[in-house]
Length: 375
Ligand SMILES: *Cc1c(COP(=O)(O)O)cnc(C)c1O
Image (cartoon, rainbow, N blue to C red; front, side, top):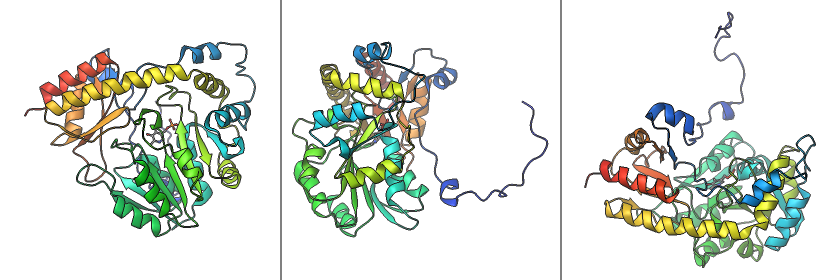
């Protein structure tokens, strides 16, 4: 391509320094790129926690029905979807805000709450956007490290939360590590929240958790604190490509300000129709989650036998210490046509995160790791 003859001197544009200095989001490689690099046509994409079962056939039917009108602007308030969610979750629809993925909700919450120098508490290793969106607003991010036994450091978290940050971003079950807070642990952290702090509990993997895991929406409703619980259709419901997630807020005031911080037509017509159809076919989601949980136990046992130290998982992925640079192992797996995610955060470069895929994909991963990991 022809380069423009004139080049601007570097540094001429006064970018927002908080945005210009952001770290890049560590997204999983796409299939076309993996084909080009590996020479394999059949790629196992185990880096982005997508659902190997696809999505409910009722979603595809809804998208080919007359109710889908791509030429019209979709309802900016997502009224039908919020009503369906309100009934399902026993929540006032006025407390729900729907986003273009829960990612957008993380951005909107940050925009709604943060000013430069405000402080935010999260964990490390972290879900990238729990750090990136606060940094974009000029906030300071305090990250509480996981313990040596690959769990939440509850003492340190309790202390950091009690210090009164503007926002606490916590995912439970925890991406990228895998464990979830139990009821007593979640209550302990919630009790540490002071007035002036918004507690954000990101439950992207809620559906994969143990049956006795706490339900954040129910637990927080009784707490009296200001909160947002995030849920998504991307993981258990298999709608990652359509982008739909939502905030369940403590009250309509939080919901109003989060809503004001998003773009008006954020959730497209396909996403709204698909999410309603997915929600109506809960049986599909539950059957898929059951298959994934069974596979998770099988893969964890096989990787454990290879001598890999795995974190306990209540999600659709496994996180483990691979004993050396995980980026080198990820590169070798890519040569075998398997995309995984090598962790890049400082101090965690020995960890690898792998999504639970189809049984055949998981077999392929187990076999490849068996050849690459020597014990
Ligand atoms: C996958 C994930 C999300 C993003 O979900 P989208 O709804 O697809 O934007 C949010 N939070 C965590 C912790 C995740 O792992």
